[in-house]
Image (tube, rainbow, N blue to C red; front, top):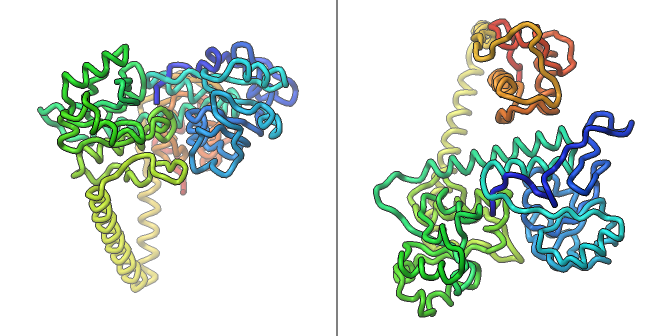
Length: 450
């Protein structure tokens, strides 16, 4: 799983500024270096399991008509496979009549040429290495799937949501003066996840010090593991028993303390929801006392078997946590029922008075002075900046905008603004005019009734 500054789908995306009459909205064409996508693709062949993870996270799984063997996500397990992601069966790809093919840069060049000679564009990607690149990757993949405006906004919002979740997980790790060391290795030779990749950075999100953070070769990685003697070793599936018997590893602290855990190498490289799933599993493994991280049982399944190993102790803890949550929910439901019954027993006069008082209280809104509104200040589709962030936050505070502010005024922001305009008896054009903004940030604005 590697973060991304740009999707680098063969190169970074250059958004199209011209469109035919059927695409006058500016959504298409979407231009990538050397490629032009003229309309929304209804049929996508996804050879890259990481791109598939992103498409699924962004709600496009129904567009994927075929996949590679490596795309083992449960959401698309029922669609046909076209073979391996590096050397797929081109005829099987043509059989599903795709509009676009997403692939990794490892795809066989002859196969890629054959697919493109058949009239289908093959977009290859370079994985992200940091948060900024991750956002750009999401924006560009979603732009291909949904257009320059709507797609980019969706990609930005989803990537920001994942990055926020990763940061939230990082914050729940207990503070300690004790350094906990770990590594993720792909094989017995010492090939490991480093800080040059997003997968290597996942260890730090879990509060762990990656002993192979700076390892340029497998030999260097192996030496660092032996010298640092890590507390935990995470490894590819099928490697745990081999590590325990290997002379380079068997005397390490992690082996002696039985702190070796398997995580599918495909899973750790994916850059969709798998990012938070892997971090959650690592946190649960190292800090089992924490009860608020995502349960490891939620992690994606591959070919019917779990991608991430969970111990019996962890399963027991999860069972106790689930029981506690269920009991809490039952208690809340019982309390809610009792309160409801008591409320029904009050007189109609009291209910009327309470309703009136509640309505009056709900209508009270404080003015927001965060945005300096000058004459001719206005915003519309496609604009971005810190002012847009403040507008989105105000809309969210008033109940019109459900997502986190992104600073980009796309379709979702326009729809939220239309809802505000409708509730406040303004022209529903989704355009943030000066007068609209003055009302939006004033104490006279009506919040959403929802």
